[in-house]
Length: 313
Image (cartoon, rainbow, N blue to C red; front, top):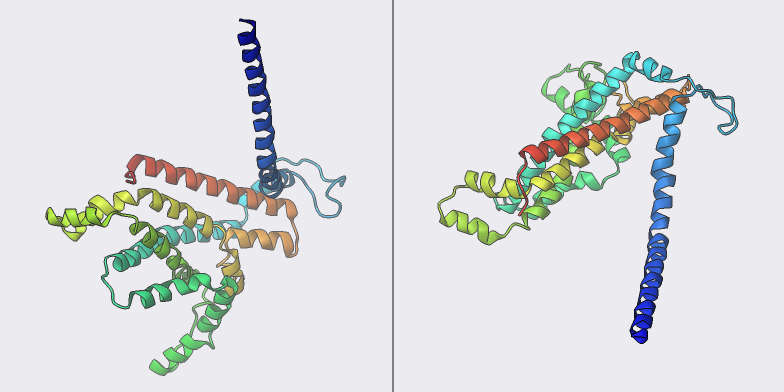
């Protein structure tokens, strides 16, 4: 009996030692990722919140003369005309991304998957090619093409002599040119995402549906789209994040011109932080608004998918 108790005690001790070693191993493996996350993501967000609530105006950050001013900079931002112009342009980009890039990407992917087009490899390459080119290069290229002395002007003046190119200098319509380039540039990303996931669908399932008399529309609505509901939500989240981070392309293409009518929140934040009159707290307030917008849009997307989305097989 004593030997049994001793064996049980030793077994319990080994279990305690094993759990302690397991805990140390877990901490050892996860700690680098946690440290990187706090250093790269969490700390900058917390620091930005603190900065946006202060009156910091430059100089030493730690130990400086900054003091708490509450939401004063947020109120100034909401009363700034250019903030609302930038926000409106961001909304346009979100809409063109979600209701333009994703549907077009799916249509092209579906056409390739169902072999509805010829020269499939060439078709896929041409649509995806803009994705692998630097946004800086694309912005400069399209700025040259659409400039009053660019390719579009040359072509149109041959067709209609005296035609004046105001694509990028008309404050009312300049943002349409930016939206077109964004639509053209990123559609290929969603083409590949949808094409890869369409190939996961069991082809025998589609053949069985055909044998049962289902037409192309019924196969699309009853089998393919429900199978891709999770992928569609993922692409919407990617599109939202991408549309809120469209700084590089617009900076290279228009820099917010004319009269800051093509500015977005990221560019508005840059101008506030690095162009006179420099205002670091207000720039941080803009960054916090960007983060909040991203979270709200993602939560809404997940809620809509949960309510109306199908289930992936």
